[in-house]
Image (cartoon, rainbow, N blue to C red; front, top):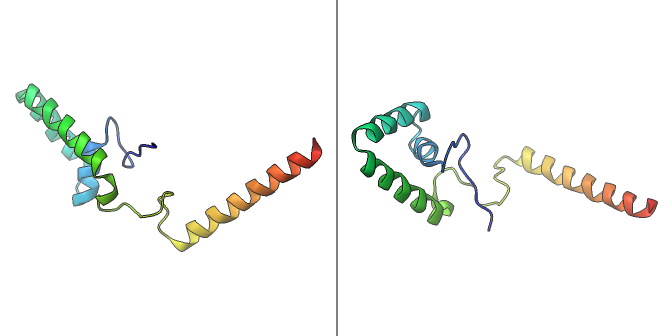
Amino acid sequence: MKTTRPEGALLAGVCAGIAQAFNWNVWVLRALFVVFLLVKTLWAIVAYAALALAFKLFEDQLPGKSKSGEGLSSPELSERNERISDLERRFRELEGRDQ
């Protein structure tokens, strides 16, 4: 099972995931979490762990996630990825002939 973290994730990606979902600044959210961590340490740790688990369980339903496994959303990037895969396959074939 391959796990994926939101882009810009530091630990489990909770703050980055929330910031991405609501289009917030991730550093402001992290600063608020640190304040929460200093004020209510146990609650902050429990909340972070619960959110990390929830993000892991429902990662397919998060906003901003594409349905493809590659995470490429534009046709140009998908086409480029296909060309790269084709070139890699050709190089492997050529390496097999040389041996």
